[in-house]
Image 1 (cartoon, rainbow, N blue to C red):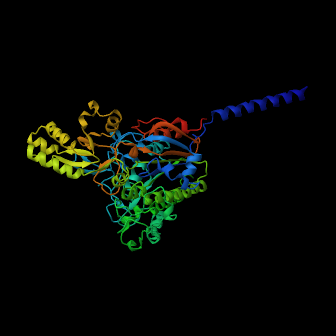
Image 2 (tube, rainbow, N blue to C red):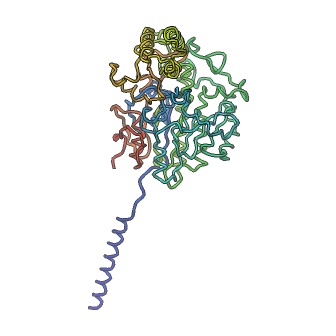
Image 3 (cartoon, one colour):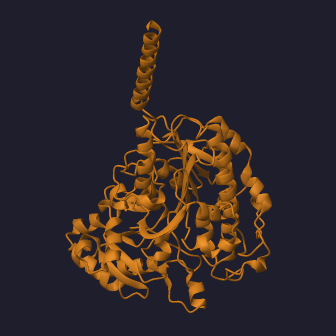
Amino acid sequence: MKKNLLWALCLNLLILQAFAQKNTAATTPQPVARPKLVVGLMIDQMRWDYLYRYQNRYGKGGFNRLLTQGFSCQNTFIPYTPTATGCGHASVYSGTVPAIHGITGNDWWDAKLQRRMYCAEDKTVATVGSDSKDGEMSPRNMVANTVTDELKLATNFRSKVIGISIKDRGAILPAGHTANAAYWYDESKGIFISSTYYMKDLPQWVKDFNARKLPDTYYKEGWKTLYPIDTYVQSTGDAKDYERTEIGPKNSFPYDMSGYIGKDYYKLPFLPQAATYTFEMAKAAAIHEQMGKNKETDFLAVSISSPDYTGHSFGPNSIEVEDTYLRLDKDIEQFLNFLDAQVGKNNYLLFLTADHGAAHVPGFLKENNHPGGSIALSNLVKKVNDLILQKFKVKNGIIHSTYYNLALNHKEIDSLGIDKDAIKSLIIREMEKEEGIYRVVDKEELGESNVQATIRERLINGYFPYRSGDLQVIPKPNWFKENWKGTDHSVWNPYDAHIPLLWYGWNIKPGKSYQERYMTDIAVTLAAMLNIQMPNGSVGKVIEEVMIKK
């Protein structure tokens, strides 16, 4: 009897212990589910159609890996103008538009300071890693924060965030205000640098990376087509007279760059090897900073600038651009393989997008009976300023013109007591006579203007009061300013505003969607996936269809 009671007591104790363990397990906090590393990959001047224009020439492991194993948002647009690099990088990472984050272009006329302002300039900081002024940069001109900032806040600053790009703005704006580091290319030295905003001295690994002198290696290689030149059937012939010649005396393959070794590092960004160089720097950062191997989620923001340089010079239908993307495809494949080995295939979340697209070159359009052309906007501004001087005695009535934004000389106009609206009316009347100009709009009246609704919304989203000028020139489709050779971007039209958006890796469902999405949705979606607060100026929406439902 006693033996049975003893067994019953032991059994009850075991049951109670099991319940206690179960209850403890149920109440023990579990870590928030997040990937080890987030990688933002932006391609500067990538039109959406490049995903498919060269798809049959891409390998299986680059763009096609992202398309087949990841999720593609096929109809992703930029919801503002101007569609420029600074705005694009700020908008992707802040989840908002220039009207809120304040980066209204790569540069703008600042009405408060009465001078041109570059988007990342900061005279309160100094260059780190060089004696040039290329490092006098920071994110301070961006008035909203970013998803990278919110990740830092969510982990009490334990997450590592690093931005890397050839362009300073491509590294600085995505990395946000609280980044551990941002690195960009010093064109005068051919090395990666930073600023005292982030650090007092370059880490030893960056010094070692710079000591490899990779730009000299790339110059020795030169640039010849990856495949026989007669196989580039998606492009026009080589050496068109509407192409530019920034990388040498001619605009045809092969490009011999050996003469620039040790002399001229400004030409490197025009070569496809500049993308390779950027990826090598990103790999070095991941290895030496142990990104993706820490307790908290890290964020590596990489922007590939070289397609923008090449695109501006040669245009979307050039052999140079086709070869740039075929080589970029191989770089992406190698980078994905690196991430697989370094972090683990299912341990990182990657998105690929672009800051803007590009228009076809006017000469190419004319050659193929398409409408379009180039507006000599600087000459037109000079002509209109002469008329303003004659009629109103105001010198430089239009004091600055950038991205089709016209800033008035308010200081001079106010001092003379001139009717500002009368000057605006003259400008609008004269400029709308110009071939290639569709409309000129008074920005103070955007909400009430009779401009088509989509265009009006894009203009409103791009308007930050003292950084956006007074009048907006709207060109006709496929017309752009100044460039008779090469191409440009910055307008609302789909060739500039329709961009790729690919998601890959951790918790991403393979597939595609044709639902209309926007650049500003990216940061908000990342925030939702990471279970962190969205950036403080966000206007985007979560793209639910990309995520595996738990």
